[in-house]
Amino acid sequence: MKKKLCVLLLTGVLAFGTAGISQADYMIGSQGPEVRNLQKRLNVYGFKVRTDGNYNVATANAVKKFQRRKHLSADGIVGPVTYKALMGKTMYTSHAKPAGRGNASIPYVGIDDSRVEWHKAGPMSDTVKAITTEAQKYLGVPYQFGGTTPSGFDCSGFIQYVFNRKGIILPRGADEQYLSGRKISVNALEPGDLVFFKTYEEGVSHSGLYLGDGYFISATSSRGVAVATMKNGYWHDRYVGANRVL
Image (cartoon, rainbow, N blue to C red; front, side, top):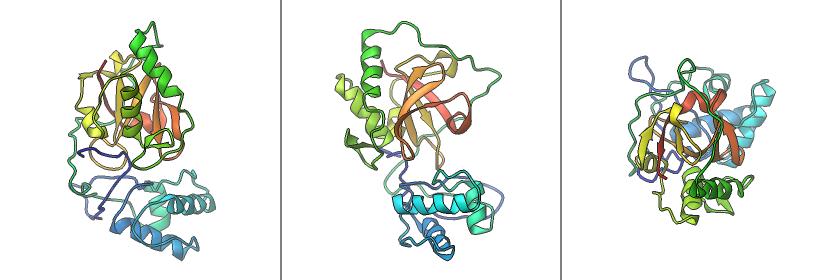
């Protein structure tokens, strides 16, 4: 995406079959016909939401209620398990790219635990220390689609804002940030590096600031600005790569 906004999907097209199909999650910011289908099913289950094709906070809250009813992890995200419980079929999707936006090519997704070596943060330069300290000032700031200020951030808006505060200009979108600086391996990660993830479609759709020892800070749709781990779990499985801009 050109200037991708982390969890935005302006058009979603459902494709069925076994070849050439990619799997994706639906979350706050996703839009399109399949989101409308999800909303219709939520209404069938008694969770009243507008069937407008916009995956907003109300839709996420309805999904959470549905997940609790089905004894699923209540994260408000429609992944494969929630999709099957809600729609009664396996989630095979081929999301169209958001209108007018590109899509950064990525070679792989996920971290190979047999090769990774996590390192605790060592001595940092003044610039790196200033940026990581600045980023952590905004812990708890809520997520806001398109947000670029401390009243609310999306992922790439948060990264851009933090770096701009220290006089470093970065592109607005996560995929454009992915193309900035120089690529580094996961074993070369140091505090201040940018880390990138694939969340809901092919290509880079989430960016964060690495803090050391497998941890990074980013603006998430579920927790706002928060620190998370890449050592296991959601972000571990969706890691795309990293680059160094400092």
